[in-house]
Image (cartoon, rainbow, N blue to C red):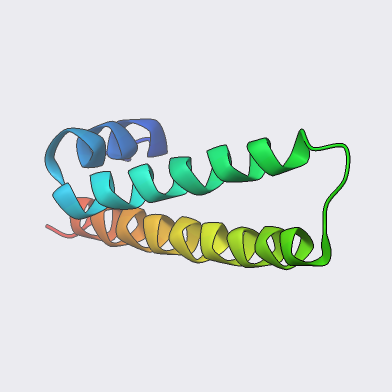
Length: 78
């Protein structure tokens, strides 16, 4: 029986400390990006910071998806 991605994410959030850490990091990067996007003017340093935050956020998202894929594979393996 297939397990839905939502169920897998719920399981990871509830019981996987590494996934919880990644989720928190992702949320922090998102918050920082939102703060920067509210500025009426971004300096060149701010623009570099935005680029770095986007890359970090993507790396964390990839790690989260990797954990989800691992759990999905484990759930299908008898």
